[in-house]
Length: 306
Figure 1 (cartoon, rainbow, N blue to C red):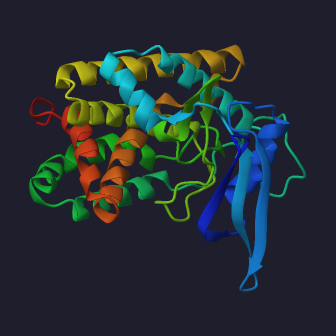
Figure 2 (cartoon, one colour):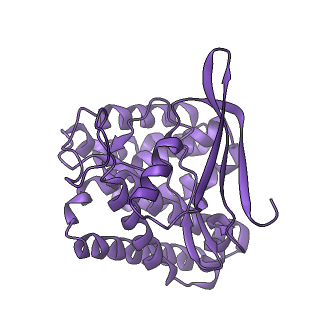
């Protein structure tokens, strides 16, 4: 509206509680500036229950989302942006790590809670089973042939999660990161629309894994839509992932919080995310299946399955 504010209407309206209404005031209090500034929320009582109708945030001039600008970077072979994304994500997690525990009166400086009773292993195994069931044809046959390897990589999630649990973004991928006139901003704190009943507090590694896999998806988009050679696109994704993770680790170390990231969980969460991408493709966007399948075929070539 007038290049001043953005009004995001929720269709249909979302029943409260809604994640954004908790996260926005906390990010303001934590002085996190890597998002569009939140201004207001419009709610109303519908059928006897309060609902969120719209969110009002600041307008970010010249903003483009990551499915545009990041594909441009892949096509050009540039990876300098990845350090900025790593710092942005770490700053977000540092801010969210002080989110008050349920029942607390307000933010705490004590840091994230210890591990809680999340069923990461059961959730991941369920995602794999559903992906296997929903993916048909040649892709389905290939996926079934890799089921054993996928389960082995998911296995660490079956053990008790020993990493701190924090409030996470929950749907963090390059499409949620705007490049605008003055830098980068993470948006859309609505939670993951494809995962019902997801825990609000999870290991930071889940957000990081979703973001790194989205770089692999960008490479697949560049291959399919920009005719970037396979070897060059996948090498770009590897370099971008490495730069993002290095910057993320460095920022946590600068703030004396390296324990927020449990790197043992990255590949298991990445594998689970690819399964969820296949589920999303099967249910909502069949043409998207090429991206997660392309990533999985890169991760599990024939010579690694024996």
